[in-house]
Length: 405
Ligand code: C2E
Ligand code: CA
Ligand code: CA
Image (cartoon, rainbow, N blue to C red; front, side, top):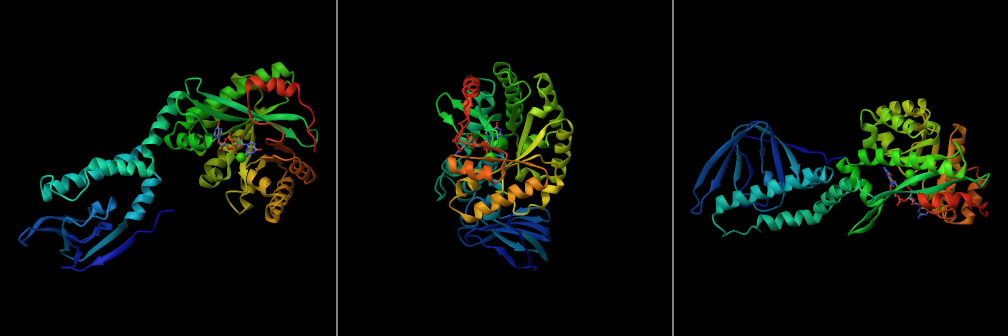
């Protein structure tokens, strides 16, 4: 949510901002006309220009609180929309990193030009534009983010990016029934970069679209190979993570379906993992897309369930097959009554609605025992197995022994 802009009114002759005062807000003129005056060294005032509706005044205040370089006076009744520095940075932070950096650079250079023109020469108080730009870039980590985004795009076509597969266990039979595909990035100089870092950057830059398609294709092929080696024909499933960007792309269902068909596995073997946030951000689009996925045979799982929204009523609205209880609740289950109560109600409610329940992040035997007693269907966590490369999956399945709980 953005901060609300404030509307302000001024009468003819009112001073809207005064040269030399600290600048903390910019204004968009909604109605009326203003004049811009500059006071010279000997105190004489000179009108340098006038501005009307639809233009902006005091824009330099969006980058710093340096003194106003001119006075602005209303020539007639004016209505202005006030934009605070805080609102501006909030909006900037929410935008694409390249756009963010470009805006800051242009504003800073413009400030530099103006002050040199007005004050003259090098003899001014402002830090050089380069220093200010570097300050911004450092503050928002912009340069680093852009670098990682570009490197990630390139890495997709190399073997720096791979998938690891974490077994998912049926709590009743204690067998491995499927895997979650998790992306890994081994960078040649930075080393291992956590998906917690590169996935949000890939989402922001749009590279996630290619990454998700790659992950789906690669995990479908891996599933086919794993089936061949284990003899578990058409019995294992693969859970693949998707983001809102994927869902917003036009041919999402078609391309997912095509990829699955090409790999010669059944659509029923693919579980699409998405988060609650995606559902709430674009409910109608998500509903239609999910329906099409389900119609094509795929299964839909809501990831990190319980973290996003307190209202559970929306679940009826979407075609959902599985709820994945967030690991935080599992971690807190034995320490915190609220987490335990929440897990109980998620399981009861999900079951009532005919859904399967998965719990993730199980690290201890007691957690597995309690979740089994509560009726949870499937579990995933370090207690059973960590995510492993494909080369270790077959041995893991072959040597699988019923875990103790
Ligand atoms: P997630 O989808 O919630 O995946 C589960 C995360 O929990 C994985 O972290 C997994 O390694 C970790 N985990 C599994 N069992 C345990 C446990 O017992 N204890 C603890 N502490 N952690 C456990 P990972 O692989 O670092 O992935 C982090 C997140 O990055 C994922 O969270 C997912 O949101 C995202 N991600 C990973 N791969 C992909 C991908 O291919 N596409 C998309 N869109 N997102 C991905
Ligand atoms: Ca997931
Ligand atoms: Ca999760």
